[in-house]
Every structure is written in C-alpha cells, then in structure tokens.
Length: 177
Image 1 (cartoon, rainbow, N blue to C red):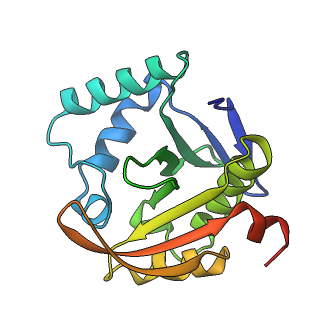
Image 2: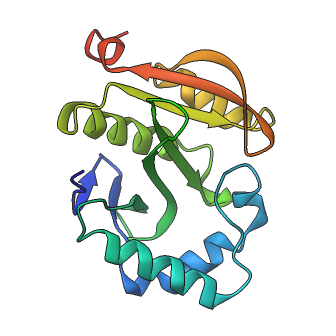
C-alpha cells in the first residue's frame, strides 16, 4: 500500500511522522483524554513512544507500511492530532482512525482530515469498504462518522468493549451519497 509524503486540505497538512515529532507524540500518547476513547495505547515513558515512532518511520519504506500520519495546521505547523487506517483481521473493511488534541476539537479539523483520508483511500488506493468504530460515549466521533457519509451498522464488540460501527462503501462515496 502506498503512503503519501503528505496530503493537504485548506487548513491542514496530513504528513508522515519523523524523528522530530518524538516529544509531541509522547505528550499526545500520554494524554488519557485522547487515548481513552481510541485503540491507541497510553504511553507512560518517552522510550515507549520512541520505540513506536521508530517502528512507524521504518515501516514507511517497506512493502507493508503502517498508515499513521500527523495532522498539522498549515498556518503554524503545529501537530494537533493523528490519523490513519489499518486492515482488520475480522472483516474485509479498512478501519480509519483519528484523534485530536482536546484544545483543537470542535473546529472541523477532524472532519477535514477524515474527508481527505477517505478521498485518498477510495480514489488512490481503490479501497472498497471503510469502517470506523467509536466508543458509545464518544458522540463527537459518532457525529463525524455520520457527517462524512458513513452508515450505522450496529454495535460491535471489539477489544472487550462495545463500539458503534459505521461503514462507508466506495460505491456510496462515488455516488455522492
């Protein structure tokens, strides 16, 4: 799967992580407010984050890269979140994920980033089914899934937790629904 160097929207640059991102990524992964409603691990040490970042960066040059990218603002370059996608073992869907720093929520940044990732997934990578799993308490993510055209599939138990399960098909996306 091909990972771009970066993708751009009106206000955002979605880019590959690099070694300079270590400290910011550690603060991000060490914030329970961010990780509690995601599948992302809570990092308690800078070394945990360094190991994760090294694996991620090394994967970019392999045949099976990890599609995880930083969300940064174009105007000041500040990293405000993370997004990406991964194959699921238990379904034919490709799971999209996203998380923003709490101070940047409610400004449309997540929607902007997710719309760009979906566009790339469907138009460049020809992915047929994109899913998102949201904690029932994470109403902002549930609303975002609906806003980008995903259809509710029901409750799905994943990682010993109930999740709201949404899907967007390539056909639905290309038809503009």
